[in-house]
Length: 478
Ligand code: SAM
Ligand code: SF4
Image (cartoon, rainbow, N blue to C red):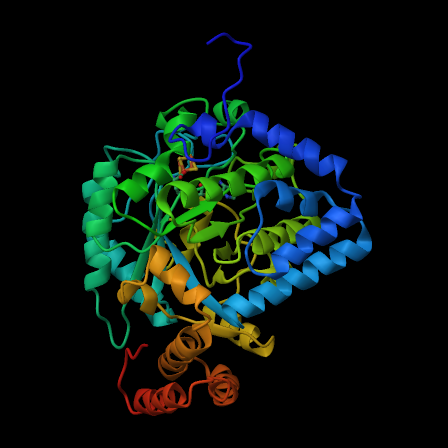
């Protein structure tokens, strides 16, 4: 092949440059720019989206590009409606747990890069993990996302597997971590199989940027430099048997329109090859950190653009959960919760050992947390805004992952299944961990929300289970 030949676009290909095809992304951006004022086309796309079928990356790119005020209002309204139709008012809560900040990569946006010689490097022992997990359980968390740098020697797969075992084995008071998601560097099919066997929930890996040239510049050294290996990681994860995978880009590194189109192409690729799209999409933005200054990156996006991205992702992939972390402020989180976010972290520490030693945050924190409220406050705030904070992990534990979870969504059974599950896990939280004020707000909410369960029999059982929780029993689920 000569340098002038272009690589063909093929969503079914297993090669990164074919399924995230640069020419196709550029053609999509051109198409979107040409049609950004094409009201007829925009209406047609919105009509299709309203049928809950999702959109192609080209269609979604047109909506993202559109700057007709009236149409944008329609886009936001539709995102809100789709969010309500698919997820109701439930918001799933989780917390990150940083195991180690040793790293041999050189990502220019992350303070854990290998050339940062002045931050203390730390890796938790199994005993320290136990203490962190007990602190998290005492806050009320049931769902964690494990985070660590890439370092085969210090952060081996064996270390991670042992840590997962430790975490699942800790039973402290009424607490238990019931779902461990994992956010670690791209690895082999064999290692993904081992993670699957260890019982992980979602495998999360952010692409950072889909733009190959920028990717290589932003990851100048270390194994993460390999764009194809990184981009094809989700395929290997799925071949290894993990069917819940979480995508994401780090907004601020490259042009957001490019990232948006490519992210949806990635989702289409997984759907085309494995018959199931991503379980979640995360939308992190670069934050200040030790030796990282976000203003040195040229592609930062403002809050309005951020909200528009969230709304357009919601419309394009209605079955995919969307995550926003404590990188975002309370105010921003409030805005995007309405538009499509289904999971948030709360009470987070982004340093190694930070739940036991918060004062060490300054040394090993991966990025500045913007929303620093304790979990109890986050839970109450959600409820006061009409959301049901959910600690549910039932789908994963009932084996409803991948396409089985998707069919639950598609069959419209959410109100008879996820809704009561959310209420029961909220009741557990209120009983075991909440402040008096939060418990009061929560009990009122549960009473109201129970009435919304359409199936009479399910409603009756949920009411009985909630009474049982009050009487000391735990862990009910549909
Ligand atoms: N080391 C693994 C990796 O790079 O994939 C996974 C864990 S890393 C701790 C999690 C994510 O944090 C990265 O994928 C990156 O997107 C994000 N991150 C790194 N530096 C950041 C910063 N300064 N602000 C916000 N997010 C950042
Ligand atoms: Fe290491 Fe991940 Fe940070 Fe990159 S983003 S330096 S791989 S911890």
